[in-house]
Image (cartoon, rainbow, N blue to C red; front, top):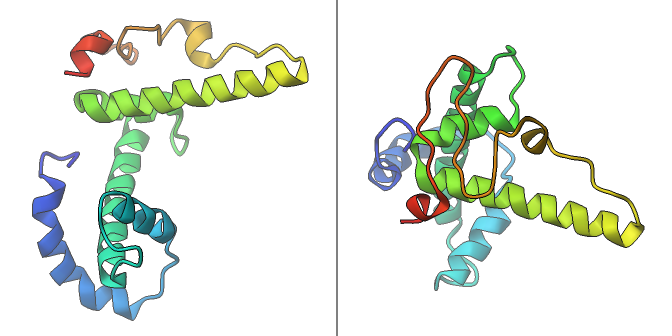
Length: 157
């Protein structure tokens, strides 16, 4: 969906085109168990059809690969992708960006809670040090590029 095409519309065509290729090559399935659990959580069978999870995994992997390609292109250091690069890539997709930001905030809170239980003080994150990500604001622009800032209310609409 990053290039403007809806993921669900591309799924049937991808399934037909990818079916022979996926059976020819053996590739590790990284998300099969998670996707099966998600399908069950959304009302599907406890043991979904393997073809269903394979198709979903292929769509997810394609999305992640495309996202990473775009993040690499947005990166200022060739061959190195930072969190900021991924967030910058997601800037035009408010829901994806908001969810990624939410997960980063949750990760930070978990790290802080672990440090508090161990009696350590949490070091500031790159976002906190550079003031790039403040509560209630959107992502700051990459150097030399203007990006419109959004409040959390605008993003969650």
